[in-house]
Length: 251
Image (cartoon, rainbow, N blue to C red):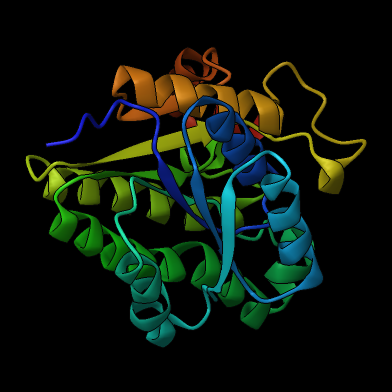
């Protein structure tokens, strides 16, 4: 059985244009990773992301993946595993939605839920079974601190991440003892190109910081990773805050 805490030689990224995913891939390529699959909707951005990683010396390939088309997951993801063993699968896809607009348009809200949760259930079961069949591997799932407790400003997104988080924990339990493990990563608000000018609190983070935490979590064999680490006690306190008080908090 392979050492699940060693850096992966092969990596499959679902959500191949994600800034967190690409920061993680760069960090892992600098250590040991030699083959990377970037899965996502075909686009110039996906190809540009692949070229950027190829420049670091990795064998990088792109493949189709659409979270909103679960009927295609077994076929599309199966093609990757048919090429050879995959040491790590990184779930980095999802949409933040727009709470104000989504509350007024149920179809938009459902799209957020289908992308972040339903799509992940399908892809998680497909990749989990494939990893189990090969007898080793790690599934790293990017959850969110928003999954911990409903918040007025983003409860649609937060509820989808809460579903994802619980599913990933359960999948990890189901795969325990098979040679496959699941690591759930809960970052705070991530400062990136898409959030320029926002998320400047002490609890926010960056794609590079999340990538560093992912690598450390892999080495430690962690089941849950918080980024930044101070979020763990903070969210423990917020989870136990009286609801009337919590409603008044700007968190």
